[in-house]
Amino acid sequence: MSAEILAFPSGAPSGPRASSDPGSRAADGGRPGAAPVLIGCSHGTSDLTGRDVIRALLDDVRAARPDLDVREAFVDVQQPEVADVVTSVVSPSTAVGDPHGSVAGVADGSAADGEQPGDAVVVPLLLSGGFHVSVDVAAAVEDRGSGTGRAAAGSPLGPDPRLADLLAERLAEAGVRPGDAVVLAAAGSSRPGAARDVEELAARLRERVPHTVTVGYGAMAQPSVPDAVATARADLAPGGRVVVAAYLLAPGFFYDRVLEAGGDVVTAPLAPDPRLTAIVLDRYAAAASTLAR
Image (cartoon, rainbow, N blue to C red; front, side, top):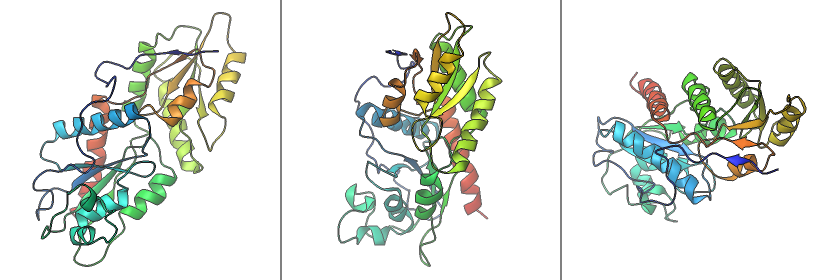
């Protein structure tokens, strides 16, 4: 069965566009006393539209806070890696001296000879806690010793009531009807905390829509999205449809899986959206406050 795919909401990119370099930075990012650099760390994707969507989200963050140095990093698939971007901020001389030229400060020119160490906050552009948050991001912000700046990690974007509002809006845009069942489709993680985050978001969504809401995962957790769709379909009243609410930021590997999971309608991914911009900045502010103590 082919799912009806909702077009991207107004404001989301429909194709490749010019964007900031992954290591783009404000002129004073390494200046002592400057605000911590905001490093937006996403999973990474080979999908060009997905890359564009994440960059659009970070461009919105830059527009909302032009005083901040905002850089992009990844935990998988794309470069630069989050640990390298953190190093380019908190220990720029180390980044410049990397013999393999693989550190972000070398690759994108963001670090310069004589630049002073600064502080950094990594905001995971991820919707729940999981391996990448608890291992990759946590390792990236570890203390690098004396003479370096400090780094802290923000919380992932979800769960957050604003995400439930955004999902409810995506469902309305998709034309959800009385009698439809909703499957909340998340990426999935082997970490139990990630599933708890998704279940909390599902509970918030149930408060906002008059539909049965169940959960399915793209990988590493059960039930899978296809299984959740099949279960929801078995319980449908005549004329009802299974609407899959994509709890994903952007197109990519997991969104492709959701499209193939057997739902009748699939909502668009969440980014970009002003509520996501606000959540990113809230996560940044909370983590930056720990560096000010």
